[in-house]
Every structure is written in structure tokens, then in C-alpha cells.
Length: 200
Ligand SMILES: [Fe+2]
Image (cartoon, rainbow, N blue to C red):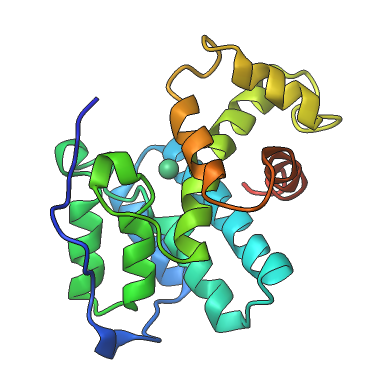
């Protein structure tokens, strides 16, 4: 596994606080940078659960919810075209566009082991939590005849224990991410089951 240490912990500029892009602009960036439909879907799924969590659990106002959504939507935007420079390229692009430093820091901290950036606030911690579990739950939906219909937490936990299932999903990262928040894994799984199916 490549290690993409970013070698810094400050991202963006405080002067750009509150500078966001629209969801349409973020989608346009994805269309441009991410030809792989599956990878685009993954980012849309993480964005949807991030946004829902911000609104339902953090009482976020619309602008804050948009920050969470944008971080989710763009966190792997450079993965396909710049596999050896994953995270650095999208971070530099968002800095060039003078985007809010919270969004950039959130993206930079979505894999502390790989990028060397620790999640600080709850937006950072939740992207780390959702990223891998969301992928595993989606993979599980694809092998179930009913997709997400009737999916339950128990079934997801079984798949998590099966190391060979969606083996690219790091169980270590999931455990580490969950250890940093107060919400139990079961509640996170249920939240994703509730909010992910509608994403297309
Ligand atoms: Fe991801």
C-alpha cells in the first residue's frame, strides 16, 4: 500500500473561511477528474451521509452542511488520475480555488495513516469513519438480491468479520476511526443503511 504522507498539517488559508463552491461545481470537477463511475458513486455516497450527519446529528446550518457534503464529494477526486499523488493534487486544487480551509483539512485527514494528518474536529473524524464502512456496505448491497432492502446491522457486521469480503476495505482503519468518536459502530452502520440507498 502506497503511503502518501502530505508532510504538513496546515491547509488552505484562514482568509478563505466560508469560501465554498456549489454542489454543481463540485460535480463538474468530478465529471472532469473521475471517469470511473463507481468511484464517483463512492464519493457521492460519502457526501450524502456526511451531509445527513451534519444536519441530523450536528444541527448544522445549510452552509456548514455544504462544507461536510463538499468534503465527502471531493475526498477521492484525484485518486483515479493521480494514484501516486492521491490527496495532494486535490488539496492543491482546492487551495488554488481558495476554498475554505475546513473542507481541505477534512479531505487531508480522511486517512491519517496514509496522509499523516490527524482528524481534529467532528467533520474530520466522520469522513474517516464513513469512508471505508460506506464502501463495504455498498459492496454488500451489490451481492444481496434485494440490494439495500432489508439490510440490517447484523448482516453488515458479519461481512466486516469476513476478511475476504471487500478485502480492500481496511478493518483496521474502521476500528481506528470508530475509536475516535462516541457513537458505536452499530449506529454508524444503521445511519449509512438509512441514508445511502437513495444515492445514484
Ligand atoms: Fe473514499
